Amino acid sequence: MKNWLPNMRFFSLFGLMALLLAGCGKPYLSTLQPAGEVADIQYNLMLLSTAIMVLVIIVVSILFVYVVVRFRRKKGDEAIIPKQVEGSHKLEMIWTIIPILLLIVLAVPVVSATFKLADVSPMEEETRDENAIVVNVTANLYWWEFEYPDLGIVTGQELIVPTDERVYFNLKASDVKHSFWIPSVGGKMDTNTENVNRFWLEFSQEGTDKADGLFYGKCAELCGPSHALMDFKVKPLPREEFDQWVSDMQNAEVSEPASDLAAQGEELFTTYNCIACHAIDSKEQRPTAPNLANFGERSSIAGRYEFTEENLKKWLKDPEAAKPGNKMSYSYDHEGMTEEELDALAEYLLGLKVQD
Image: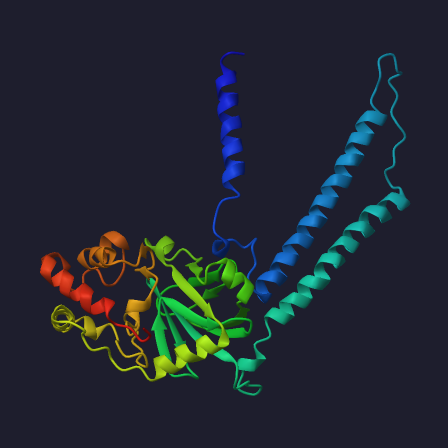
């Protein structure tokens, strides 16, 4: 008694903590807090399937308890074999028809939703909708590129979209298989090297407000040592603000250094050959590294650090420690960089902005 009592207390405490902590989190990270049309459809299907399973469990449990109580052998009863129902046509019909009906109840909305979510006709050439927002998503080790082919702009790591309207995506990978996933907005879809997958999402303004204007995207396919760090951010904007962002990106010119220290950083950016991999023009696409035209407006560093000067210098000083296996780690002599060079390069990068 005394030996197992402490363990019982520990497991009880652990279970209580798990229950309480299960309610913690952010609205932009949970599939159970939908923030768009696709997420609503998928959430309702989850509720329907869960309700059917719970109903089956309840009915079976009631029947089990009834049989155990009603037909249990009591003390003094004769050892007789109850009447057997094997081969009962009526019972076999019941437990065959009921599962079929339950499957139909689940299958009809699932099939309907599948066809609805697969409808990407507005981005097809034959049925093209000129007003539809199309984004080409390219997954790389370990960063994301977002190209707006109809708008002529490219950005990296942060996806900007309009709220309350469908956004269509072409998904592909440049190296290995990844998976594009914004948990609170819609289900995941793989990005492959050999083919392009297509789907659409809708970002509700109400859900965006609850998430404080920022959703987190993840890679949901094991792709290497920094798979867990392959994040991206999504900033949904009201249509007017989105149009303004598009205009600013289309008309943006390469940012000029705002100080002597930033000018030194610009020179270092060329000296360390960063310009060979990173584009700083919002209309230029590079397959090697994220576009930095609006780097100074991002919400995070390397997809994982809070956007501060200190974290930026930490990333520049040792990118391998921050994100193991990334292609930037050994592309320049980061170990030989002095603190003065780090200050200058950070000052230049933080000044790369398209909007004030």
